[in-house]
Image (cartoon, rainbow, N blue to C red; front, side, top):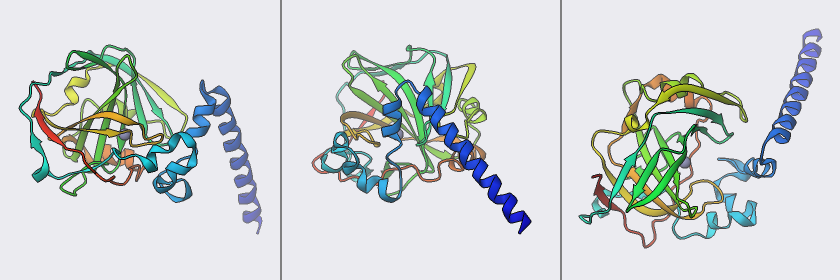
Length: 267
Ligand SMILES: [Zn+2]
């Protein structure tokens, strides 16, 4: 009984501390409204993916959209494209910030000099983050993880590069990210080592491309997707350091409808 009472006190104290901690985050957040709204959706239960569209009027595309992501990529239906889209990466070494957003671990580069060129149009890398397991599937198979590199042009249009992850060797480019993963939502860490994210890409650079959406609310459409066909590797320990925090942060597959997936090569 004595122990129980002590435990109850500890629980009350912990709850109070957490409540205080939450308040601190909301007050300190530069976009406290956005943060509050962000916390209203989740990956399961009554705020899970099947309810996203009704959680907020601005999330309506999550349920009404016809060009949503992720999708299953059926390789027998993919069209090999020979047109000469100019897709180029010009990434420079950068330091970065690692954030725990409450939905994933997000890495924000310290500069705006990581450029994805699509037909002479410049898209700047804003952040990249992780999903466990993968959101996109190839022939109805998931990979252990998927990384999304989110780029934006000066008109606010978004291009996401997706990298599948399979279990294998330690990923040295991501070593500094996984050494510094903030365990609690709202926390962030600075990593001052200079990292060139070009080293993250697989050797074989053919990619699937299609038009889709953000895979999190507000599920905005008009997103250009570029998904590298060859997976990259991460060590089992690196994968589990993420999955311990986020065991299932993926949106279920969305109907492909009238869309075509193309296979192209990076020049
Ligand atoms: Zn994502």
